Length: 303
Length: 295
Image (cartoon, rainbow over all chains, first blue to last red; front, top):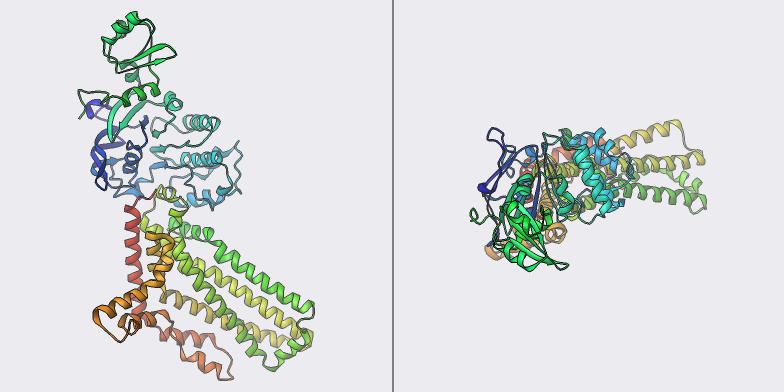
């Protein structure tokens, strides 16, 4: 799978490094030997269908589950050294996981004693301008407010890696937009790495620097977004003759939308496709649909 | 240590209903009922004040000791339910992943729950018990004042009694917690794995173990086994002779003598073995919690 990766320069120690990562639940193998490196300072999108193995991969990174193969996060074995690792890793795995019995101020007070890298002042400042008040109990907050609170908590932790697993699940569009804007504006720096999974891929596309597509426990695409833009081309074509000619370049995906035929090409020179119709870069969701329906995005390197 | 203390404090916040608010409500209701009883004439202050003159010290001693017994029974039941519920609360509340995102090991997390069951939670109930004693003594002394028998000397005596009984309750509490530590740890460890099912399982377990011994090693019946005798032995706190001697005497109650007697009667080897057992089962439960990703 390393062939799929656009790795960081060798001198930079990856934040996450996995080799031959496998996980079985009973007899069923969920992860089939993943190999990947995540360099620091990047914003990664881990994208896949339900049950593709995204959460299992994240759980392996966070030390929540044991796996075969090797995985190192910040140089540590996450399963063996989870507690130590969590000093520099923050995660939101489920928006509803904040302890419901606590008041906001109690939560902050506890965290300031439990987590050495948590800043209570930062957490308070992140809540300024929101409807969340210190005396409120978590159980009385709305879903959106809990997401805001959880985001404030993880952003107040001075972590090197932030992992968000479907952090905006069930939130309305306003909250989702605010959530990601806050994350970009107030948290991300060059020293921090963000790994995010979501089904609303179009909403995070603007912020990603790299993507990983996972399907049935295998990474089928691991690439920088710039490379995605160079590598994949979307062609919208109307007349039949042009369609037939374009098909000669073996589109990886083809569909008809409102009477127009849309094709996605992998690694085909745009100059060759230009005469057939309108060219553009496929959106992440278009690419996702295209690549998830074929055996592999990179047949020559797939196992 | 700061993180551990915070985790112990977190247990009080999470279970303040059972260990603080509930007992305070109970005291408020009892105190309110007492005041009401005097106000509406259900109890005659002069009569009860006169009653105190018959054997004033003994009434105060027995009254507060009775309160202590009541609070001990309350504490035993809430601690049992705390162990069966609190150790599984993170899973039940769907907050397991939040706590796992903290730089704290699963062992430390479970140990903090056990430490809370030994310190801050019973300590809170003890505080409320002391408050109930103050209110009891206050009401009793006021009735003596109404009756005209309350004096400064009596007040000094009941303050002394209060201190002696408070000491006795504290020592019973401390010894009881140490004595029942392995049982609390076992219930907590089982709750980590099976949640609230730990309640029926922990009640059935002694009978099951005893029956297994009877089936495999023989005996008169399932409750005439070494296992059952051991469980009976570990179920009851030592009964120091001082308590019975004092009840049949006319001597004032001495908390110091009672405490010394109880401490001397404790099987400290068993306490030590129990502590090691408690740590072992908590460690096993923490390994289960570390390996089983329920969320």
